[in-house]
Length: 210
Image 1 (tube, rainbow, N blue to C red):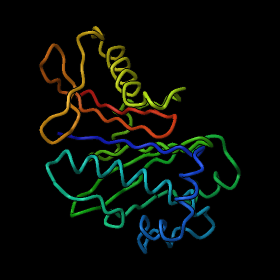
Image 2: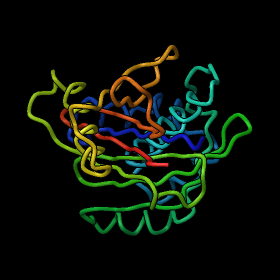
Image 3: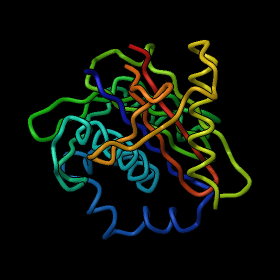
């Protein structure tokens, strides 16, 4: 199965910005090859971007049955079009879409794409190259972050129901024995891989209809 994962971080959060600008945190997230990419790039933004890419790839890794702790430096990010990212970031673009990101970890390859705005960074990973056209994903800002888990599930189920023509009341999200979300319809698992993420006042989803 071609699993997917997604991750979002808020750039409006002062706590996030302080963490991703901390030299110790940067060293924790970026390995030596990624640090070399930092020439001419906002290091806080690059660290934030790589975190979401690595976290989304790690979620894919977990679905394969690998019980490995999340060690960001073990995931190597190769942003093929890094110069586009640099130019767009320096120009202050509203939205920067970054395709063709290859990630390698533990002998496996992952393929990612990211969207960076002034408010958040959202990354999606899968195990299949050029898969972004087959993945549905979205981001929503919510008012009450204390309900973020409920809001994220509702956001996802609403999107799947719209895309598949399914009655929303028939859908539910359950956790399996490995704590991985599984989409259910009338109590039976569906062949639709899903991923949820939330941070501060943002919730996001990604799913792939096979």
